[in-house]
Each structure stands twice: as structure tokens, then as C-alpha cells.
Image: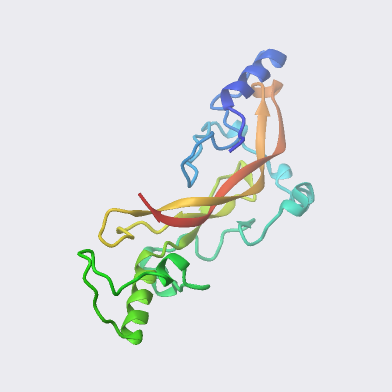
Length: 213
């Protein structure tokens, strides 16, 4: 995904300053798996931004056009997480039916014999099949912590509580992602000799899921 390795950053920082922030991880590590695994932060509050470092107006200006209110929030969202029960009633399939489903030949059986099927029955079966194999992206709000700004991100997940294929065996998996830019509080050095500032980092978010092996 183009992310710099934390080890490389640590080595560069150590080379120039002779020190490196413990637990240094500026951004998610390179990975083919989404959503991003939680970053392990150093527990020492000395590495947290101070109140004067959290001026929303200043940080909003620093982030500029990268601020996307559809995927990030400065304050606690009204509903931080949506349960699967809350999500199910809201799932609606948008757009045209995929061609691979629309063009299915239902008149021929696996054994080569042909059967007659009415237009209405065919339409209902294809609609059911589309709904059954559909893989929506479910978005939930995630708290990235004090060392990110904005600290709340709307993260995508593939609904994966059951098999999406008929017969069973395939599951919904991420196939596309979009990248959003956040600010990350970065400290170099230790204690009174450390220097901290906000730097831009990129965060991948699942944007499309597909039924696959």
C-alpha cells in the first residue's frame, strides 16, 4: 500500500538524533489485509499531544482539502458502532443486476436436460440469488485515539457472518479500497529532548467487497 516501514523510520531517526520514540509506528504497517489492524501505542502520556496542540481550527487548516467529513469526525459520532442487527434492515442493493447473474441460463440442468421456467419465477430466483451473493461494505466508526486527528474514522468491513455462495464455500472479501489522509502526532527523541509535531499519513479504507474463495 506504499506505507514506510516503522523500522526504517526508526533507523533514520536514530541515525540523525541518536534516539527513537519507543513503540514508534506512525501509520498502519504494510499489509494486504483490510481493515487495518490496530496500532500499538506507547502508553506513556508524555507522547500525547497537549491541549494547545489540539486546536481544531489550526489542524483543519493543516489537513486542508484532505478533510473528508463523510469518513472522519473530530467529535464523538452519535453512533460509534453499528451492530449486525442494526445494519441488516438498512441493507439495500443499489444499481443494476450484475451481468454474470442476469445472463444465467436456468433452463439447463447440470445433467444436460432442459426445463421450462417462467419469466416471473426466473426474475424472482435471480433477485434472490443477487441478494444472497451480494457483499455490501458495512461502515462503522472507529476511534483511532488521541494521536490521530481527526481521531474518528468511518472504517469499512465486509459483511462476513455467513457464506455468500450457493452452494456454500465462498465468503465476502475486500477487493477495493480508498485512501484517506489523517494527521498523526509524531515524536522524535525522549522526554525533554524530544520534538513532536503533526504529520500527514494515509489510511486505507475498504470501499468494495466481493464474493470470492
